[in-house]
Length: 402
Ligand SMILES: *[C@@H]1O[C@H](CO)[C@@H](O)[C@H](O)[C@H]1NC(C)=O
Ligand SMILES: *[C@@H]1O[C@H](CO)[C@@H](O)[C@H](O)[C@H]1NC(C)=O
Ligand SMILES: *[C@@H]1O[C@H](CO)[C@@H](O)[C@H](O)[C@H]1NC(C)=O
Ligand SMILES: *[C@@H]1O[C@H](CO)[C@@H](O)[C@H](O)[C@H]1NC(C)=O
Ligand SMILES: *[C@@H]1O[C@H](CO)[C@@H](O)[C@H](O)[C@H]1NC(C)=O
Ligand SMILES: *[C@@H]1O[C@H](CO)[C@@H](O)[C@H](O)[C@H]1NC(C)=O
Image 1 (cartoon, helix red, strand yellow):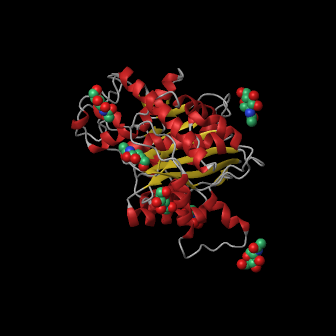
Image 2 (tube, rainbow, N blue to C red):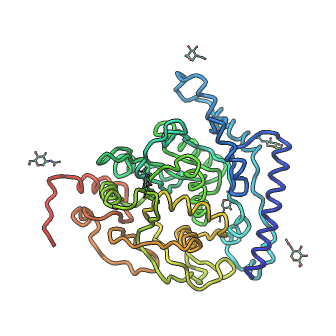
Image 3 (cartoon, rainbow, N blue to C red):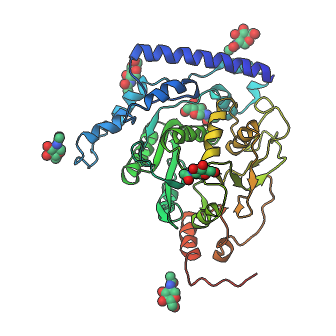
């Protein structure tokens, strides 16, 4: 079965490549796409200084033109540029996979588009890490998976643990990674919302794909591809969700304390899970049928709420990911990429992401004293995050030793 799937995948890739060439020839217009297959092209791209999509470039012609147009000309432009970009075609061959009809629409959808890894970028900020001319020595890059509608979460993160700053002389930068949500007017509204946010904060990367649970791995790969191009010098990366409490001060101290690793060696640490099995119950959110993942055990991986990794490991994962077929569960997929490179994820006591197969334990996670010495804990409401961030950094906080 796996061999058949591989074969199908290979066919799809070939078709995709042919399609790309045709589209590029036809429109004779370089697009802002970059797939692992088209690496040579994007390497060539690097000589081209400004690689932002056209709809973002235009307004820079006049730097004093800061106010946003009341018309939606930018969205219009984006729609046109999108039209020229290759759209990923559904791979109908999967309809022949045994049991296909019995799968939920979500899994069917996943199989149809599993081979798609390249989507048009809608919001970018090429100089996030200083750009090609003046690369900034970013110590900790916070790559936070969000959804267009999670406005409140992003707002509170900007004010709390994900604030861009220097701590102990180390530069912290933040990026939210989103796709698109809804359809029709709703989709346009949400796209506009993140566009406004990005206009103000320069902290959103958005690609035009459906921001769904089963597309999280796609989101991760697109981010790593971006990092490879725009921020390869980042020493360390926190990859996490937008509802966690990440004690970024403690993280900087912990990463600084690694004597023999300045980001140029392997590091991947978090809430380590070993020997976990794919869920075969179709009613479970994490259901993965054997047609999607055949083996009965996942490689070791770190819970996706948040984990820390070195720049070295992030880029290594990106490179190997071209050979690793997409699994919809993004944290497991990271484990699969590590396994493919014979690298091991590690366990950090300070990262607590309760996961689906860990029976949830009643701890008083709202106690600032409990959080003071941790690195990461999930999940919290925005108001709790704000409260806790103030409290854990309050010098007056007195905690009895236990
Ligand atoms: C930029 O905009 C300002 C104010 O709208 C205008 O006075 C100026 O001529 C513009 N410059 C260019 C190069 O278009
Ligand atoms: C996209 O292309 C199609 C076919 O060429 C055309 O009919 C449609 O109007 C285009 N849409 C936009 C927004 O340009
Ligand atoms: C499915 O298999 C049948 C018989 O092998 C074949 O005729 C058909 O074209 C296949 N469908 C797709 C979408 O590949
Ligand atoms: C992932 O995104 C693509 C592009 O928007 C979409 O066609 C596909 O249905 C999505 N997959 C899932 C499983 O949501
Ligand atoms: C990081 O450490 C390696 C040795 O492990 C060294 O070769 C490299 O120059 C260091 N990089 C920076 C930017 O300090
Ligand atoms: C800490 O306590 C001092 C003395 O009681 C008080 O003046 C100060 O405002 C407190 N700081 C915070 C952040 O609560």
